[in-house]
Length: 218
Ligand code: ADP
Ligand code: MG
Image (cartoon, rainbow, N blue to C red; front, side, top):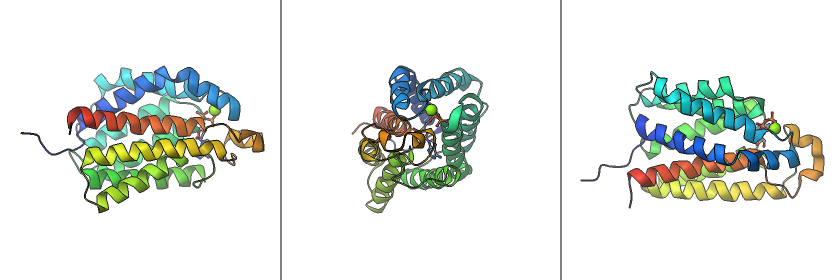
C-alpha cells in the first residue's frame, strides 16, 4: 500500500541533499550569472552552504520537521556569505516556524510554510516581485501551491507545478532591471541576464519535486 504523500524529516533531508548536490554542480554557472549582474560569487556562496549541509546532516540532532529546518537554516546562515545567506536562511527558518509542531507536513502545511518564507524574504530584502531577485522564482511557486491546495491536488502534482512556476519566474527575470542588491548597481545593463538567485531558487523546487516523485511516484 502506498502511503499518502507527506514531507517527513527524512524526505526533507533527501530534498536538501539533492539541492546541495545541484548547487555544487551549478557553482560555476551561478558565479557566471552573478558576474553579469552582481559580484560573481553567488555560486561559491551557496556552494559553501551546500557543503556545510552535506557535512552537517549526520550531526543534526533534529527529530521533528521544524527542528530539521531550523538546523538547516542555521547551517546556511553560518556558512553562506552575501545577501543570499540571510535570505536562504530566512526561508528555512520560516519553514521551521510554521512546521514546528508537526512531525511531518502535507500540502496545506507546506504551502503555508512557503507562504511565510516568501513574506520573511520580502521583508528582510525589502523586495517585491519584479525587482529581479530570487523572489521572482519563489513567489510564482508559492502562488502555484496555494492554487493546488484550493484544487485539492496531490502533493506530487503540486510540487511539479510549483517547480514549473519557479522556472518560468526565473526565466522572466531576464527582462527585468535589478533594483535591489548588487545587481542594481548595473542599472539597465542587468536587462538580458537571468538573476542568479532566481536560478538557485528554481533549483530548490526542482530538487523538491524530484524528491517527492522518488518517494511517491504516480
Ligand atoms: P550578494 O548579493 O551579497 O552578492 P549572492 O551573490 O550570494 O549575494 O546572491 C545574489 C542573489 O541574492 C541575487 O541574484 C538576488 O536573487 C538575491 N538578492 C540580493 N539582494 C536581495 C534582496 N535585497 N532581496 C531579495 N533577494 C536579494
Ligand atoms: Mg553576489
